[in-house]
Every structure is written in C-alpha cells, then in structure tokens.
Image (cartoon, rainbow, N blue to C red; front, top):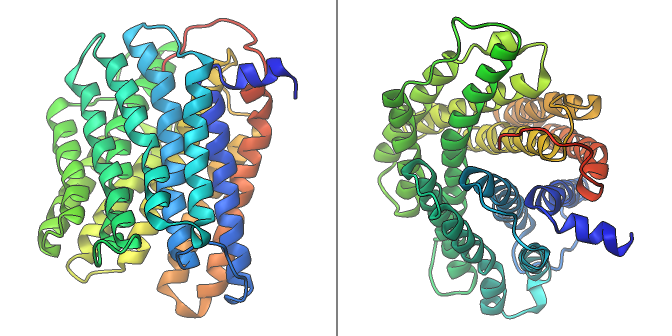
Length: 397
C-alpha cells in the first residue's frame, strides 16, 4: 500500500469504518467458531469468558464501526458541509482499533484502563456528529444522538461490572446495547428503505402506489423501540419491556408492509433493506413475547443481532460505499450472495436454539455463513475502500 492509498482510506467515513466493520465481523466470529470447535480448549488472552468477548465485540466493536461509517458519511451530506480531514478519520479509527486491542488483551491489562480506552471512541464520534448536525439542526436527525448515548451507556454498564465496580450490570449492558442498535435500525432503516424504494420506482416510471411512510406510524415504532434499551439498561420489569418491544415490533412490521417489498425482488440492493428491517421488527416481537415466557429470548436476540443488525448494516454499508464512490447502485454478485447468507445465518442460529440436538452444528454453520458473507462483502468492496472515486453522481446516504 502506498501513501496515497492510505490517504484515500482515511478520506471518508465509509471507506475506513466500513472496511474495519467487515474485518471485525470476520475476525470475531472466526475466533468464536474456533473456540467452539475446540470445545473450549482454546485459551484467549481476554479477561472475559469467550462468549462475553464475542457478544461485546459484535455489539460494541462491529456495531460502533458500522454506526461511525454511516453517520460520518451521511451527516455531511444531510447538512451540505465538507468532509472531515484525513487526520480525524485516522485518529478516530485508531481509537476504535485501540478499544478492540484493549479488550483482546484485557487479561494482562488493568480493567479500568481497558474501560477507558474502549469508552473513548463513541463520545468523540457523537461530539463530531453533533457539531455537524447543528449546522442544520433537525429533530429527526438529532434523535440519533440519543440512541448513540443509550448505546454507549450499555457499554459503560458492561465495563463497570468487568472492572469490579458493580454487580450484574454486564448482562443489562449487552442487551441494552444490542437493543439500541436495533432502535437505530428502526429510525434509519425506516427512513432510507421507503425512500430508496420510492426513488427506484420513480426511475422505473412508476408514479402511483408508491411506498407510504405515515408519520404517526413512524412515531409508534420509533418511540417504543427507544424505550426497549432504556428498559433493559434500567432493569425495568420484564412485562414493561415486553410490552414496548411488542408495540415497536408490530408497528415496524406494519410500516415495512407499506413499502412494497415485493416490487424489489429483482433488485438485491433494495430487497435486502426490506428483509433486514422486517427481521429487526420480528426480533422485537420475539423479544416482547419472550418477556412473557413465550418463545426463546436467546432466539430473539440472535434474530435482532444477526438478521436485524447484521443484515441492515451489511445492506446500508454496501449501498453507501457503492454510491459515494461513484459506482452504480447495483450490488456486485458476491455482495448479493452475502445478502442471502446473513438471514440464513440467523435462521440456522434460531434453529440451533429451538432444537438442542442441533446446537453445536447450528452455531458452527451459522457462524460459517456469517464469515463467508462478510468475506464476500470485504473482498468485493476492497477496491472501493482503497481506490479512487470513479465518477460523480448524486448520492443519498
């Protein structure tokens, strides 16, 4: 890699953070798969048991990189402001990476130091996003910072227990952090999915029966979706969390039903948004039902994490990378295959939860599908992350 290659990598949020997200997605699940296949014989340098390291890094490692890449790409577009300097992307991506390394080597580091390093990244990101959004403030955009604060608070609770300062807060933090990511999907996915579908329909000459996105229904899905992570972080009664999760999920399912997903079936870059949003909504419904001892909470969390978060971030990252690099908004074949593999990974992981006899095989197959999906994504988009923008065309984040 030449100096100009590195300069291009650090020239945009979608480049460096979407690349890091892809590599993180592969690395964390690969290690988790190897540990599982060794039946626990593999020793990791983490202070935490492997299952907690795996959960933390997928939520607060992968999730944070995907959020950063999207917002640092979209916010300047929303406010018509200029791009951040390369030094900013170099420093912030370095902070994100430092957090991952600190967690990985936490077995030989003071856990308070590990917490400080890992918790630095998101406040700096949020501060910069706030500074950008205040140039043209809109409530529907500023609410994203509330979700990021809730997300970061989950990581704080995790580190407080790991540092020995609290008891039984890590589980709350993990679940709250995942739910905060899912709330962001309700917000952002609820904005981009119908908008992108509408634009594609208009380009195809369709001017009637376009996607509908009523504001009251949007509020009915977003407000309870934000209450779910708050309820989890605050240790609210299960029934209270269950009710808001059910309302959020049902409202989101109604919303996605108004967006004409069937029309997108020949366009992978569109149908993956619809499917991921629907899985995220279904995960909320399953989580709500599990609060009343109907179904499995573990299954619900994996539908949310793999199908919702994994599917939507893969969809948005690939689309944003293509559009902002000047490419046509057509998913390369390897990426289109990845769109299929991620929901399949969610399905297999749920099957492993429902049928205990399939547990180990299900985990390994689900993990393998995930790894292949993100390897295809990373390899296919590698030239975009490092290469020059090929042409100019209007894009929407």
